[in-house]
Image 1 (cartoon, rainbow, N blue to C red):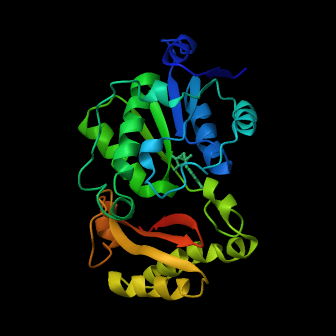
Image 2 (tube, helix red, strand yellow):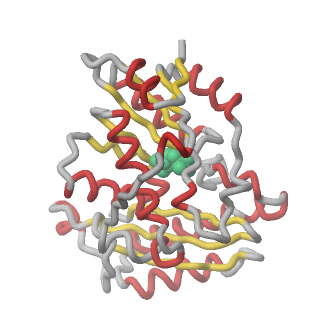
Amino acid sequence: MTIVAHTHQELRDAISASKSVGFVPTMGALHAGHCSLLAEARKENELVVLSIYVNPSQFGPNEDFDSYPRTFAEDKQKAESEGVDIIFAPTTEVVYPTGFSTTVNVAGVSEELCGGSRPGHFQGVATVVARLFGMVQPHRAYFGLKDLQQCMVLSRMVRDLAMPIEMKLCPTIREVDGLAMSSRNQYLSAEEREGAPLIFRSLVAVQTAFTSGEKSVPELCKVGREALSHLDGFELEYFEIRSVPNLERLAEIPSLADSLVGAKSAVLIAGKLGNTRLIDNLLLN
Ligand code: AMP
């Protein structure tokens, strides 16, 4: 049976201290991407906690906070079928009680890419996740690599603040045509939805060029941008290849030998298809 907790006290009462806790923070509107995190958490922990909270502080003033899909009844059914023990669905008063005055800012890795186009976004994310970690006190926390920069920011936060939590970064789940699953995909018109897989295909084009021997970052980006130019109505925000985990600029992709000692890279994209902001990425080595 899945328990729904709305307050900090209800959450604490539902968690037994002796059990290992796996935590999956989300904003709800659950899809197969979220469910893959829940399934992974279910395998590795005695208790699985799912949080559903649309966090106002990670949305900019002209973003989709008000229209973000809220589908609690369907989410609860999906959580039940994934074997979730506790759904934590707090109100804003519970997450940010009167007098709340702390922010978590992870310098460097949060500043460019999505952090450049969405000022304050990662501060909102890091602050809410730190607060949720404090309330849930998980042993393991599960995040999707679909949001690669978010994974890097939060992993850095956990390391820097010595939070006793194991970060589990899980693969991106895609539709059959390659489009990364996202709660925002439901905003797309039929025509936009049909074109949207080109975003993933542009990443694959880069990966293909890379595996055929192209190492130059500007050349690889050119390949990707060319593929994307066939997507009508797409306004590109960035198309970049960066190091992983620090997301620094690169002139060349590290060689396979370097990647074996941890020098990895990824190609990342963000942009708006009509009014819908979409992101995706692919690890290159
Ligand atoms: P959100 O509800 O969008 O904040 O996402 C909650 C968690 O689900 C985050 O860790 C996301 O990275 C992860 N997630 C979202 N979409 C996907 C996907 N297509 N595949 C894997 N994980 C995902």
